[in-house]
Length: 211
Image (cartoon, rainbow, N blue to C red; front, side, top):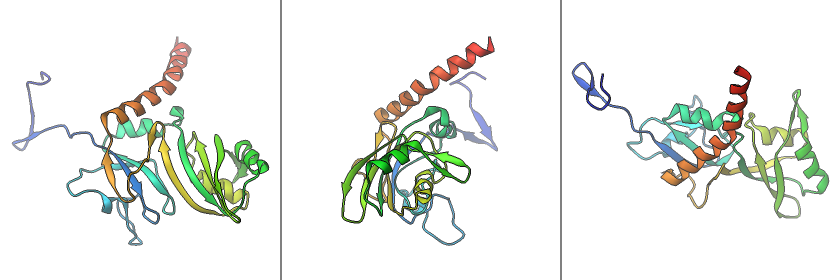
């Protein structure tokens, strides 16, 4: 078969490659990321524009969490984004039922033991503070299940809201809640570049070991 000159047909119908779709979605709180929910809860798919081809979530946000979620039909790219080796920073704004002090900041970065493993954040800083609660900006570079919530559970601090505002170089920006939009070419390129920078040294090390 000559690329670009021959075509594939099934039952007389021409088969064409599906266009790749890359979406940024501002997930509302209370919406689940699965295609269907046995409890009848709203899913992210109910918010996608009519005619959107099948896409799957890149990673997850639990039902109570909100903010930036990527969706795509490019499974290979999705696997790269979620690959622990990329260490793409995920940035969150987290409202907690406590006022932070340096001791809490140190605990979050040092790690808290939860269910046999130590969970920690990469960076944390205060955003704003009230009398009984506060907002923190938290950066993770790994994607363990419910990581932020589990850390605060271990520290016996309630999480009131959890909003993801960034993935690598991509920011949630002013995208309205419940709205999906296509990534720009520049945004897709920036994400790809960020992943390549992190994976390239690991591939080089693996190549050296194989020699």
